[in-house]
Amino acid sequence: MSESPDPAIPKDPSLSYRYWVGPRGNGEEKAAPPPMPRRLSQEELASLQRNDSKGSAWNQGGTWEEKSLNDWAKQRLKELLRCSCPAVIGPATYTLSTEVDSCSGDTTIVVVRNKRRHGYILDISLKLSARSSTADAKEVSGTLTVHDATFGEVDDWEPEVKVEQSKGKLTDSEAAQAHKEVKRLLLPLLQGQMHVFESELLQR
Image 1 (tube, helix red, strand yellow):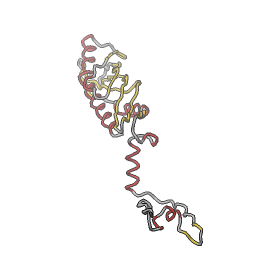
Image 2: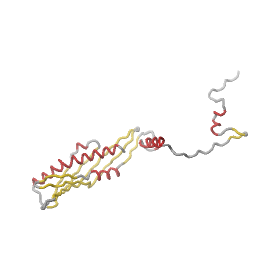
Image 3: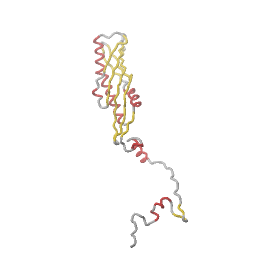
């Protein structure tokens, strides 16, 4: 009884594994030529970039990976949280200004099952200053501190505000008004800038 040919074995030698290595010639097989380098197309580059955005090369399964953005976040917040606005304190008009004094904590992107999760938890301390252009100008300084600032909770900020006099003497009512104006005028500006920060974070 003759055996039927195995359908998995190609009848045409050119379709065999040997064909891809090199065709037979004079009883010897020819070595396949070395691969030639070529420039990637724009589509291939875009595909690689999309894959890279999901995580490192070693983590293509996207199981879990955390990327720190602390350096970027601290520098960007220094730029965004430099705010100023006019405010009336007592009989004079002042310019209220802020700048970042310190920023500690973590800003991260976590990749879990190929899904990117952006987040931060930060302690942000801002220097406050208020100056008037009047002849007997009084200068006001202070701090605005937000503890445990968290992604998505900017509108719930309850900052700690301290107002001091660095030149001249504010009356008690002026000091109370300065404290109130910082929260009424500067806080919404700062919150708006933090929304910008969160939008930029989501693009990374």
